[in-house]
Every structure is written in C-alpha cells, then in structure tokens.
Length: 330
Length: 232
Image (cartoon, rainbow over all chains, first blue to last red; front, side, top):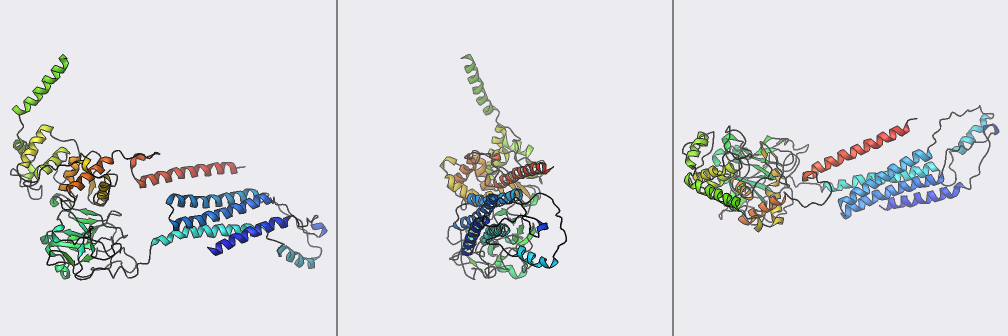
C-alpha cells in the first residue's frame, strides 16, 4: 500500500517536472543537412498528455478503492462501481492516447549518408541520454504501470476470500468416539428424533459448527435394506445412518433428500447435492449413485447411548470435503 | 326480483339433489382406483401402495391436485385438473378416510410468521422447489411449482411427502411452523416489487444471464460503430 502511494507521488512529481521542463528546451531548427538532429513534431499536446496520465492515475485510484471496499465490506455495488471505473478510466486513457498522442502519419524519412561517420556515436549517445525531467514515454509508461499493477492487485485481492487453508481439518474432524450429536437447536439428538421419511442435520456437541467436518446428515433406513461394507456392520444402530453433509464433489452442503413414498414405482432413496446433483446412496455406505462426485460420502459410525441419545462411534470413514488431487478415490 | 328468486330456487335444488343422489365412494373407488390399489385397498406389490392408512390427507392431496388416477403406475404423478367432479372427490376422500390414517390437515397461513416461514422454507423446501417456490428438478423427478397449491395442499404435501419428496412429521415441522411455511409460499405469488424489470421473479441466475446478454449486445453495437468509423 505504501509503495503504491509512493509510486503515485513519484508519477505526479515527474509529470509536473516534465511539463515545467518542456518550455525550457531549446528548439533546434534545421535538418540533417546542417548536421543537426531534427525535432519532429508528433503532435505532442501537453494537455492531452497530462490528461492521459491523470486518467491512468485515476484508474489506479479506483483499483485501490476496490481493494479498500473489498476489505471494509462496504457492499457489492461499490465493488462493481470501482471495478467498472478502473477499467473504464484505463480504457479512456488508452483511447485518448491512441487518438491524441500517437502520430498517425506514415512517413519514410530519407536518410542521407553521414558526412562524418565518426560523428555518429556522439549523436546516438545524445539521443539516448535522458533529457532533463522525464520523457513523455517514461511518464506515460510509469502511469500505465501504476494503473496496470493496481488493477491487477485489485482483481487478485478477492483471492483472499477463498478462505483459510484447510490444513488438517479434512482428516482431523471434531468427531470422537462418544461425542453426542446435537440438532440445529443445540439439544442432543435422540434416536426417536430421526424420522424414516426425512433427514436431520446434526453437529458434534460443543464443537465449532462452521468447521468443515462438523455437520452430518442423519437418516433412518429399514435395517433389512442396508448393504453396508462388512467392517461397518455396527455403524447403523436401528438403521440410523450419519454421513458428512459436505458433498465430495465441490463441497456444497447436501440439502436434498430423495425419499420415495412408494419405492417400486419410483426411485430408491438418495442424499443429493443441490449444486450439481450428485446423489449418494445411504444404504450402501454413501456410494455415488449419480452425478459428478468422484468418491463416496464419508460415513460416521453411530451408537445409541443409555438415554437413547445418538453418539459418534469414532471418526469418519474417509477424508471429508471436496476431492482434490490426493483424495480422488478412496 | 324474479331472477333472484329463480336463482335461489336453483340453488336450493342444487343443495337438495346431492342428498338424494350422494355418490358412493366405495363404488367410485372400485371403478377408478382398485385396478392398481386392489379391491381391499391394500395395494398390489410393485404397482401401487396400500391406502389402508394413507388417510383422507393423502386422498385429498392426490385427488384434488389431479395427481391420481395415473395412466401408468410408473408415471410420475404431476399436477393437472382433477379427474373427478368435486362431489365425487368428496365421496372418495370420505371413503378412503374411513379406512384409517391421518385426516386432512388444517392450516392457517394468517397465524404464521412470514420471516420464520421463509427461514424454514429455505432450509427444508428451497433446495428443490427454489426459494421463489416456482419449482425445480431433483435427481429422478420434477419438483413442482407451488404457485397453484392451496394452503391445505401445501400442508398435505409437507406431511405426506408425495413421490420423492421427504415427509416432515410434527416433530420436525410443527403446526405453527407449517402455518408460517404456507404463509411464505402464498407471499411468493405477490412478491414485493422494488421496481425495475422483474423478469418474472425467476431469481438471480436468469437475471444475471439477461444482464450479460444485454451488455454483450451493447458491446457489439459499440464495436460495430467503432469499426465503421475506422474505415477510410
């Protein structure tokens, strides 16, 4: 931020010095015949030049404002306005530069052989050496760079919204053996609270509900229909099953439960994701029935406590959350 | 005056007649429903479920929304105009209600809380029916629009869970919450108008698409004008 401000100040100073220095430059008349460098008029208009630089700086300011708006959370309308201004002013600066500053004639300059070839190096030297102040090229180049980097920074700033690194939270969830399940109202979930016709969302008692590994969906199936893997035979007391609520495809919350009223003429039950319609089979341990999910839904082993309350029997059957390169298939 | 009298007479006749010729619910059942649900209403395996404990609640929902009878038991029941006139529907519902099961639920949208209704609708219903209650899709079925459903039909669907919809018992959605949900669904039919072009209150994604289309057209127009100007 500080560096950006400093760059802005430098550009403004250069601009002033450049404008001030312009008048003092000796106008060299003559041509190649006299052995003097010519001064080519390329339509330099100090006002247009200043305007272009001002537009570029204003575009940079709008980009900075976008970052400020983003982090103060002032609202999406302001985000749109500042981004629009940043691009719009940049576009206006480019359009103005193209129409007012760039020479539009096409000319081939006759270049006679040099009378004194040994005089060439000093001339080149002189042409290359910077004049007092800053050349137009450098002024506009600097202003353009400031506008460009500010805009790039502004566009990149929302990347911080992608959230904190998940770290170990996808493997190390709050679920431990004996931890009680609580409903959305915070009260312990009893076996009787899980109807056979819909699903219930539950959380680990006393843990942060916003953690990726916290929410689970709890459903009740007829125990006779369950076809769980052999090592999970005891995970569904009375046919009550719990699965991570986070879809293994893109990490949305599983919010749909397909529950047939009469299964023979419709579809089997499925836990579905509203984002891309991945469907998981609650009877077989969360295997994918349809949709883009690449791996099964992690299952949470359940136990029923002495007071009929539901308890976790341990951690999930696999890593929770969306799939990435290391967790594609389990 | 004479016309009013005539009207009153006709009305009296209309009220007197059904008492005389009350349609027989059981006869209607045997005629229209028993092919799939069985003569004893215990269902036929693989074809149709038992109606023994479905109650007047389910009968009212399926008959009044035209979802039953189905041409093919494997068809998805969808809303259409009722197959039976109102009197026959009442008789059928009374007959099926006499076989046991829950009665037609009562619902009073006026007693509900709109804000709570939206909250509940968002968490329980909007996943399939969309937050504007205009319907959507689920894997394997169509979630119908709720724009034509009466409050009673909304309550029935919540309790029955027709087709692939989950059913929500009293423990999950109590009577007052049901009233709130019904009130919210009714409110989606006349959403508060904040001006501008609503494009049928279809939601943010269609709105965004329209905005992009219009912006794209505007940009094309500008490019075209620029291109014309650049020609010598």
